[in-house]
Image (tube, rainbow, N blue to C red; front, side, top):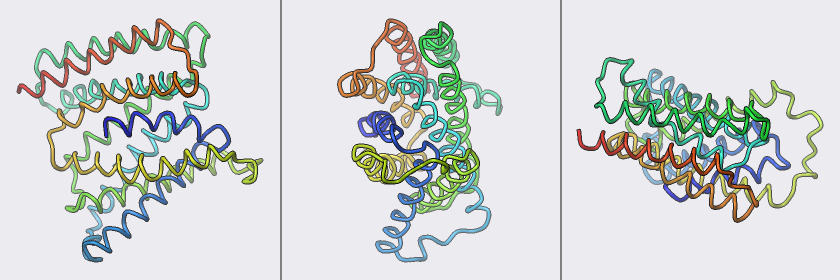
Length: 282
């Protein structure tokens, strides 16, 4: 998950070069969800996919929060901002989780609060290119909104009745999130003017990569980890993914690594390290 999710920011940037953002995200998640459901039924029997209405509703809610709100907004934002910057902004997720835990009555340690403040400082530095007009500010704000949605979905996943089988839960989440992305794409009119024959080969390859490695492998691993491991351990992906994404963006897409990205990214990664290390000691 460390490496694969870091590479998906590059995949998204290449996919949206010639594919509409929400419609491509919808196709990605619905296809991955259907394939995963078929694999679960094949390996474990159709009974493994049986869920109650409450479990199905919970899985749909988490899928919409994570994949429509979280991932879908990142896909949209990457039509206007570099993939490396998007990954660095997403790294703030563990800080929002601390805020949500405090709002729910939990009492994270002082180190966690310090990490939140440090992370917000890094977020401010990363936002500077948008405020100065060097990149589109709406793209930066869209990713920040995505991090809040992803955080709420991750936080809720351990507190609502999801399917007992984590792979079945992941399949339902991906299908629900994919349908949500597709509906938003249609509502935005992304189908108008879209010509299938004009989609580049590299965008198709990127979409296939996202389906297999970004969704079937990495997202399913994330859904499983949310069931099987402490959230503090799962959150460690947040300070590895940005490094992978920035390196790939610079090497393959020639994305510039400005001082704001370097400094702000370092601050955010340090904040995540502080939060995660504090939580793992508790």
